Structures are given as structure tokens and as C-alpha cells.
Length: 571
Image (tube, rainbow, N blue to C red; front, side):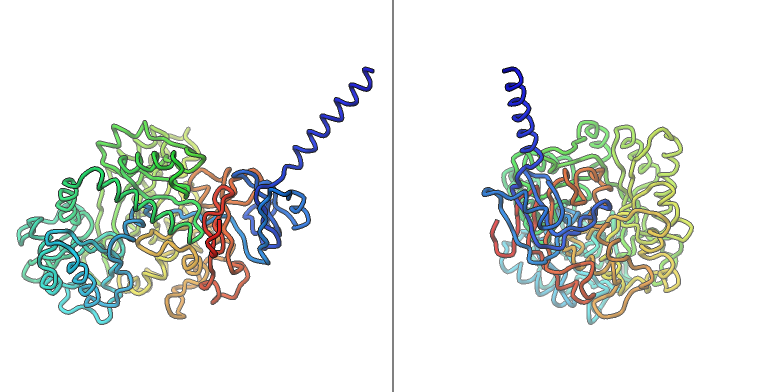
């Protein structure tokens, strides 16, 4: 009798073990080209998902074993699947806000900008602010007349819109255009001094033309923020929630499952935390804190958030700025601008203040992410990082980052790998900026140090990729195209010897992005046990003809095993 009982018990245990090893999937993708970004199992035909995790990747025959009557099965019919895109540097709230304000990215000239703003004013009450973004003086055809340093002068816009203050943010985000009404409210006159790290662009008679660069933007924005303080808390909250909704929808439609938000104040992080905990933000957010030094000192220690809301919110880094942008000549350069002699750009945050903030972050276990575009800016940040690393040799795996890293001298390129500094770059900036880079820097300097992906990769540096949206379109596909071709809108390639291979570009948008946010153990590759964040595309990005890359469409975006976007609208 004891033998019979023992045998029955063993049979039950074996059956239970057998059932456990043969878990049935909630979702299965079959008959596809699966690129996993996992070196141990680089490709497959099918993938099984259980809950929010990947269960298995293999051949279609292998994965069919995980199907039962409750499994949702999708036949990919040969389509390309890969880990969801990880946007490694963009502005989540800014992306949402851009969907609510004037989009000037497609304006061909200054006349079109004025026309768009005038239309908006017709539908606005006098006194209401009109906001827009995306203009770039170097892309206007014809060039505006009159102009100062290529920038348009405000007079014509001010005549067209006399009763509404106007703020039109430059495509780079590092300059703005204000009309006469906005400048009047800000008290701008011929004697208004340039603030530290900023410049009011003036004509030969010292009249402000309407353009405010870098820290000078605050002269206008401070007045606008005073206006916003008069709005009710409910009104402000509803605007922020709408921005989050619009940004989430845009990301999912473009195959983005994770988004590194390059700087939000504590107030917005509180809202993101509330909405994430309520399952109201479908995209996974990795948020850098960008707030005043006073607030950082008071609050930073209480804001380390890792993997909250089922890995939908992580906060463990701070965002700082050493300089501005190349397009607005705010990038801090070692040599003067070729098209503006004796001007070297702007150091927007004093180096001693950067060091104070970086040490505060280090003492509280936070990653540091510093915006640096000019070669002087990059060198100073590398020097700062190296000094702090040397002062704290016991601290390892810090993964501090330089955001943009656009212009780097030959002697500074190897320092990224040597110091373990991540180059957080946006490959679309190269092809978007190509129309003015040589004008700003000269051909020899541009060839040696502008957007030097190949040199960085060959030196052993890690690059993560993004778009800096809303500076550029958040869509990863044209960004990937820029990475592997360096082609501008025409067929000309901007120093093509620096382009990435296709697999390098995919890594920069997946596993490298996960590493840059300390999350390579849970995402960035289609590995069993990792989060089931998957994008299905119409083209094989590794093998399709080069010109077909740009035509690639998102078929499915899957976050945590749930289909959150599909071209047919079914989920």
C-alpha cells in the first residue's frame, strides 16, 4: 500500500512539473522574422508571451507547443519583429505640448510662419498667448529680409499679430522668437542687458529683433509663466494630462515602448507617478529630473524611483546643461564660429555649479546626464566627470551620460570609452543639421568632429539613440535611416564614413538604450524572462533595400504582452 501511495505521489509531482515546464502562452506571434538583440539566440520565427514576460523564442514548430484555446495567435506572415524601440533622449511633455500648439516644422519660409500665427490670432481673444515651435532660419527659402545673422526681424509678425503675445520656439529649443507684444510685457528695450549664458539678438541700432538665445529666453518665458500662474490648478492639470495622453499615443503609433524623458521638474514627476500608478501611462518612462538647484538639494534624496507601476516609471538621474545648440550658435566651441568670428557660443551653467549638482547626484546614487553639443562643452563635461570619478574611485558602474555629444575633438573621442561615459546621441540631428553645420564650423572641423558615430563606436564607446522630440519627429524609422545612411533630404550623405551598420543602429535603439537606463536585465532584447515589449514592422530593417527603410510602417506595438497599437485598430 505504501508503494502504491508513493507511486501516485511521484506521478502527481511529475505531472505538476510537466505542466509547469509547458506553460501555455497568452500571446503567440508565428511565422515571422524575429530579431532578438540577444547574442545567445539572435533570431527566431516565433515568440510566446505569458503575462507581461517573454516565455520563449524559437521556430514556429517550437512555439506552437505553447498554444492552447485561450492563446491569442497572430500570424506575422513573414513580417519583421524586434524589441520595442527605446527612445533614449526626448521630451515627453514637450512632445505632447507640440501636438497642442502651432507646428512650424514644415514652414518653408518666414512668410508661412507669419501666416500660421496670424490664423491662430484670428481664433484667439486679445491678450491670450500664442505658442508655436519648430522654425529654423537656416531652412527658410528664401532667407527672410531683413535679417540679422540669418534671423528674421519681428516687425512684420508684430504688425500681423499686434494684440496677442507670441512665443515661437526655435526647432532646437535653444532660442525663441517673440513679437512686440511679448517683448513689451517683458519690458525689453535697448538697454536690457544680456543675461549670463544668453543673448538678445539686436540690429545695428541695438534694437531687439525678437530673437532670444539660451538663458535670454527666460526674459520672455518668465512673463509667460506669470500668466500661467493665474490659471486654475484644474486647468493646468488638465493640460498636463492631455500632453501625456497625446505623447503616449504618438509613441505607441511609432513603435516606441520605452521613453527616456530628458528633464522634468518634481511637479510633473509627481503627476507622472500618480498616472503611472493608475495605469494611465502605457509607455515605460525613464525620467531625468531637471529642477532648480534649491529644489534638487531639498528633494532629490526622496525621488529615487525604480521600476514602479510594473516597470512603467523609473527616476534615477538628473539633467544638466553646459551649453546650447549649434543651430542657434549656442554650442560652446573651442574655436570661434566660422560664420560669426570671435563668438564661441555659450556656457549656460557655470562649471562650479555643474560640479555641485553632479556631486549631489553622486552622493544620492543618481546618474548624471549633461547636455553638451560644442567641442568645448563636451571637453569640459568629460573633465568634470573624470575629476569626480577620480575623487570617488570606489563607485563603479555609474553610467553617466553626455546628452547629444555632437561635436567632439579627436583627442576627446577615446575618453568616452575610457571613462565609461555613455554617448546619448540623436542620429537625425546629423542629417537635419547638415544644411548649416559646415557654415558654422568649416568643413575641416565638421569632418573631424561632427556626429562622429563611427569613431566613437570603434573606440569602444556605447551610443544610445533618440530624436530629441519635439526638436525632431519622434519616429524611430527616419532616425534609423539617418544612422545607417547619413543622407539628407536629397541623396547626398554627410560624411558617410561615420555611419553605423544596421545592427549597430538597432542596438543603439534597443539594448543600448536599456543599458543607458540600467534596465538591460528586463528589456532591450527578446529574451525569455524579459518584458514582452515588441514592435512588428512592415520591412526587415536589417535586409530591405536602403531606400525602402523610410517606407517602413509599424504594424503592432506590444507593451508588456498587450497590443496597444495596430494598423487595423484591433487590440
